[in-house]
Each structure stands twice: as structure tokens, then as C-alpha cells.
Figure 1 (cartoon, rainbow, N blue to C red):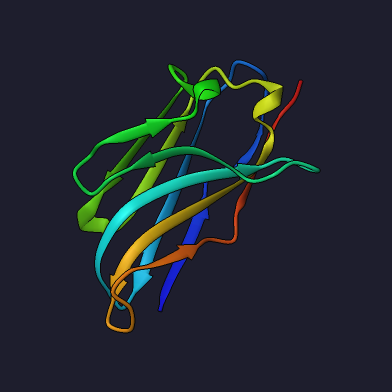
Figure 2 (cartoon, helix red, strand yellow):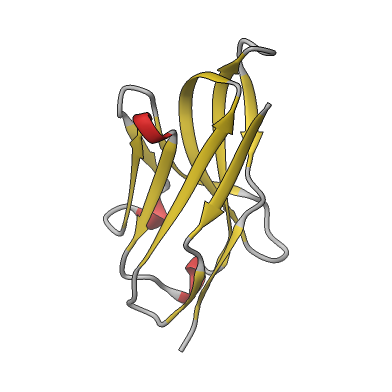
Length: 120
């Protein structure tokens, strides 16, 4: 099994910055993609950013130029640097990884989420 622990959420004023972290642990052989999703109240969960094992990144249009995703493969950790935050970025942020473990060739694993609130 794989456990994911997110951290770094909190309350920030509009225009501020936060860094989210997600550490994966467990019986991991390799991690393929590492993603950040978010879900605001009453809305569907959406993919915010993704990074492949080779470092290829994807961003949803609303965060391009403001958010940066990166990963540290040695630490099984993915980061989301969020700058110029807006009230519409308020949501619970979830980490997801696709990994190979001793039990599965390829499975999705989700973290519990960390709340980001952008408000003055």
C-alpha cells in the first residue's frame, strides 16, 4: 500500500503564496505521475497540475503562470508552489500518485487533502 500525506495548506490573503507538499510512503517500487487536484464546495474535483516521471508538466488554464509543480524522486515528494493566489483558488487540495508497488503494477493513490483558503 501507499500512504500520501499532504501539508502546507492554510489561510492566505489574495496575492499571497503557499507551498503544498505531498510525501508518498509504503511499498513503492516506482512512481509514474504525481498530480494535484482541488475541489471547492459544491464543485467537481479538478486536475490542477501534473508531473510525469520524466518531468513533463501539465497545468489547467486557470493556474498557468501562477502555480508550479515539481517533484523530488529521491524523497517521493511532489510540491505545488502557488503564487498570486485568488479567492477562486480556495478549495481542498488533494495529491494523487500513480505508482507500482509490490501488490499492483499500476494503481492510483490519494491523499486526505489539505485546505487552502484565499481571503482578506
